[in-house]
Length: 114
Image (cartoon, rainbow, N blue to C red; front, side, top):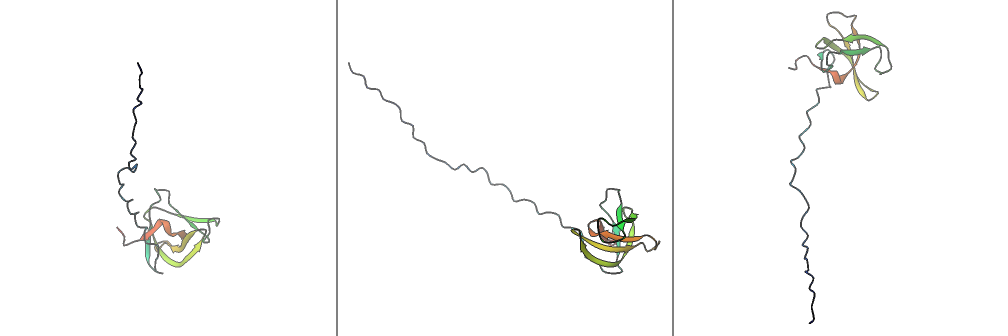
């Protein structure tokens, strides 16, 4: 008796390996307005209560002359100056003129903003 061995043949059909289509990334939130006018009133915001360092010059290594508190109002007097990767504005507190200095725009917004 002769036996014939038959090995089953497996046929492989490639299929797409892509998963479901992902939704597009959400649009990043808009940055706060950083282009102010001289004379415009701005407020300190986004410091988490730490306050904003107002410096004697538009430079991260400059001495800190004053700490602006969250929601404190200032008047823009000079700027903008691009230094150390930041945009700087010279601010003066309209109620206490001795409170002044250079501040980065990242923590400022128009006093008219909600």
